[in-house]
Length: 190
Image (cartoon, rainbow, N blue to C red; front, side, top):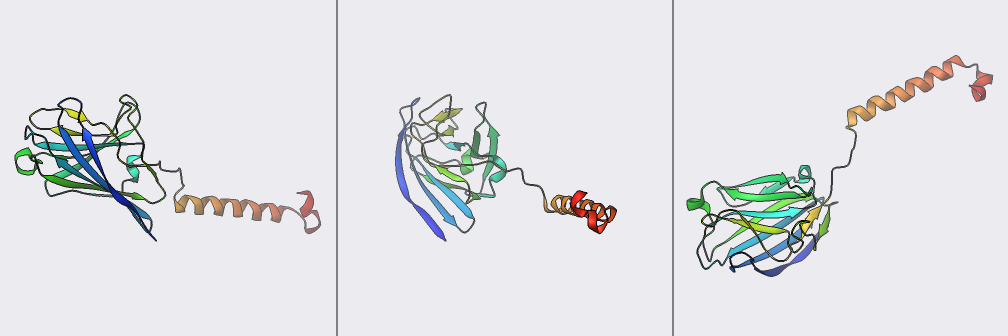
């Protein structure tokens, strides 16, 4: 089954610098995976190089099964003080891989399809956004107004198959031992 949430543009006015950034996104589910693709357009008039793109989500980082960005970009995940995951793509080579004014770049991550899509998640300490970016000249992470869809979910505590097999074998052995101790006519009283 393929389920696609159409691409929606989001025009964001950044608080600190008055600059404008454009982000579009696409959420697509194919089989047991959902891929979130974010396209960041640097329309910053100061021509600051963008060296990082952040998405904050109520997601256990262990659920990220894949990611993608242009060559020279890496993925990192930190848990912020509120418990949300700060999922970020970054470059260590701003001059070679940074996003110049007028340029755009796609960032994507893949999670299991059983995770939820949240359209209105916001950061607890800054309740008007869930994404931001890093500027090379300006430094630091700048948060934007508005939210992008993000995955939400946690890893369930599921025993591994070998543990389940050992547990079942132990129960079967206990039942067999109990039946051996009882005479056939006493089975109901054991």
